Length: 453
Image 1 (cartoon, one colour):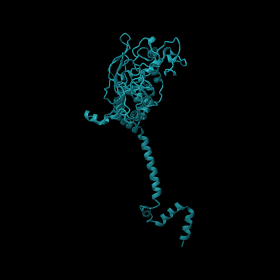
Image 2 (image 1 turned 180 degrees about the vertical axis):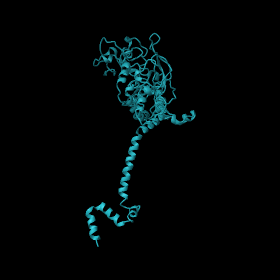
Image 3 (image 1 turned 90 degrees about the vertical axis):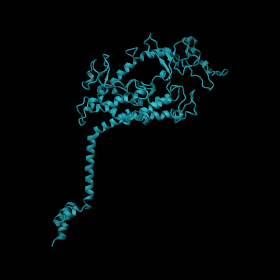
């Protein structure tokens, strides 16, 4: 810091990477330089220290210091963004990083570690609906629930229950009851529950499936991206274990996310009043966050990151829209409104965890039709049927052991007088035999000695 003017100096350790870093996200970039397109007119970093409003909150500093560190370097964050966007966008480059990740996911089956991974799995290929588009582009093709998914042709379509190998894995369990329905008995229960919990991409904002947090409102996106959406029938056994044991992890993880989201304490947020938005009531009731959007709230991203998430689409959450580039390659960003706030995200998350009783009564639906509740119920029934033979064997073994111990403890006490009744007829003979069994031959010699005439 300069001792004369009090501003930060523009000297430091040279770093090529710092020449690329720049924060251009709407809501964070400085209003003074937001519309500056000419790199030569970009002001130095020290000049941003004077851009403070009445509350004392200065504008965020752009991270790209341009020519401040190394002379002759004019690379900007926009150029780095273009490079990364080109290699990570499947619509622009066929062999992009996105495609490579999906191919790698099809060749490996790494167990999900955090909530974001579990979320991505249940929102992935295991929940594909029973009719969809094949490789030829034909839509509305219905899955026949038969055949090998590994030999699928361009005109075939397999639902998530069949494509993931769950159909064949459940059929391998011989004691599981099956009927004549295609795909097995559990396709109507567990298979449909997986479809319901995933939901459609065009889900309504008031829906209760996982897609309402991603495709519906673009709130969150797993840090692993689409890693767990691609499925392969080769790992059907692995997917079955994930469905059985990670359903509870999905429920408890979403509850943990909602709890920690309420514990966010707004500090340093420009438009939020800390006296109204208090810790423990963030985003609900009287503690609704007053930030411009959920992206502008400084405490949200760390909570999402700890659970394996990031923002789904920051531009959309901030009320901006980026063009798809279909018209003359235009990817510009323009303001459209409709910002998403913290309380809206919490309401959507709460609806996914547990459907409100008021909404259920208005729609005339049973609460059991809630996707997550139905999934937990159907998975629990499948677990019970899988474990039923072992439950029977263990119950029978415990019953035999208890009866044996009870007989050994009750019979000598003669509580039922059964032994005395048996000894009345030929009492001397039965008594001698019983005494011989209990004491051996030596005891019988004493009886014969004292009992002789």
